[in-house]
Image 1 (cartoon, one colour):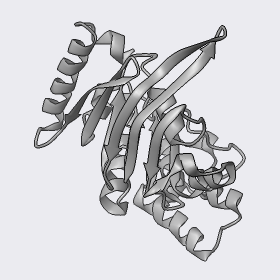
Image 2 (tube, helix red, strand yellow; image 1 turned 120 degrees about the vertical axis):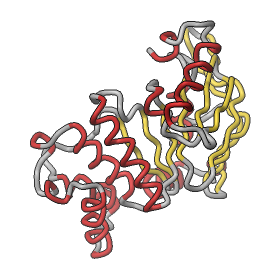
Image 3 (cartoon, helix red, strand yellow; image 1 turned 90 degrees about the vertical axis):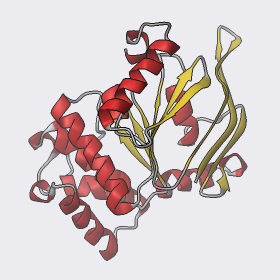
Image 4 (cartoon, one colour; image 1 turned 135 degrees about the vertical axis):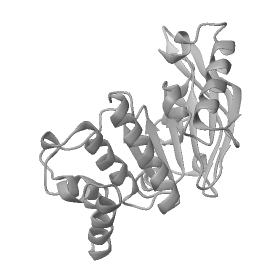
Length: 254
């Protein structure tokens, strides 16, 4: 469903190119929940920004749902962002002046496409994620976990091919973090969502089907959960992280 092939990206610093992605290749299947982890500067955010069409790669190819993104113009890329991708951010990105329900509908409001089906689907998402009782409230009136469930519902409102989540548990306590991850799992189970999450949190990553480890702009390892329990998979993740960082897991998890 998502194919990333030999992706390269550099930034100009002091007039000199500094490579950030050095030939990253990966793929996600429909309905998969995958995470990418790595130390600061490994290229996680750049990778996510390239997939989201917000920055252009120097070379390589990204194919989403059979469509090669490098072949598209800016107008077509904007349609991909609005119709085929859903976004969940660390800081929620909810608008204070809109209710929970209207925040969920925001992508359709922006696209001018709020119809009866959209209204019904927003209500369905509210009920599915346990926020139906607060859909008339404003962001300042709800908890962090409720805000993030609202953000996940908003990411799903346009039936996207892929949800991109950037540190979605980074600002949350452990209880709220688990609620958010369970919301992702529910979205995959009940709505067939495909989720690609950047995280530094091995606990959150241990719920995924697969974790991709980035180091120095390349894929250093990929771990599939398989039949492991969540705890056993987290232990394997932590061992791989320690090996990647020369024994210092904090270097990756910071």
